[in-house]
Length: 245
Ligand code: CAA
Image (cartoon, rainbow, N blue to C red; front, top):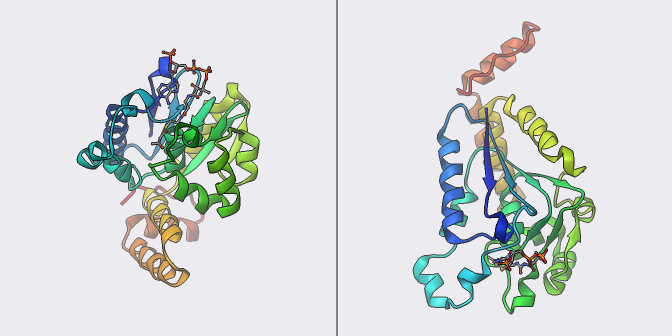
């Protein structure tokens, strides 16, 4: 029912290289198509969630390499996965690691988690959505401060600013994340999917465009068996049996 993806280059604090992005993408896209998987849980093995893009891989590369490799094409595809992605973050979530966390729909973090964009200290800046997603989440003023200073911020601050959903003790991080993911997994999958689709559109669209979009998704759900089942079950005072159709 849940799909698990664990970043696993602990010796380099799960620094994200290209191979890793394409493996994460392959796993997400497989789970997105797999009917039994209702939600995806993403976490990191070892001391960190991920301490950024792999600096060793990038250090000697030039802009033409990035253009030729279409460096962020896989990242773009991560952002259009339709099923819920729930992140469990502990330790460092920096640079590309933070950007990967921001691709998640819901974030649980351990008290020891640290978030930040240190790219400025390397003479670069975030390239996988960091300046855009952080600004949309916490506003221009705070985002500018985080991005210019490159400082790390504790989980509680990230939670207070609305970047993450919950801060929990490190020893219960996976358990609490799974509990939440299972809660979502038990909801009618088409509703969950079209809610994600609509909420993500709210980030890009004007209110008017977003409302039109929401309406189409609302109408669409009335073509589903789960809508009939959900409403019939309510009238008949029984538990609904949702099938995802
Ligand atoms: N890339 C490659 N290797 C990394 C790495 C990264 N982003 N982060 C950590 N590592 C490696 C270290 O080189 C080290 O390897 P060795 O044992 O072979 O020396 C190993 O992971 C352990 O790291 P540290 O010894 O540095 O551990 P620490 O606890 O002393 O420090 C840290 C932890 C503060 C996170 C530090 O590792 C660090 O500053 N890492 C880099 C963070 C960073 O700058 N991230 C942004 C990358 S650029 C980016 O992400 C661009 C983008 O937007 C796409």
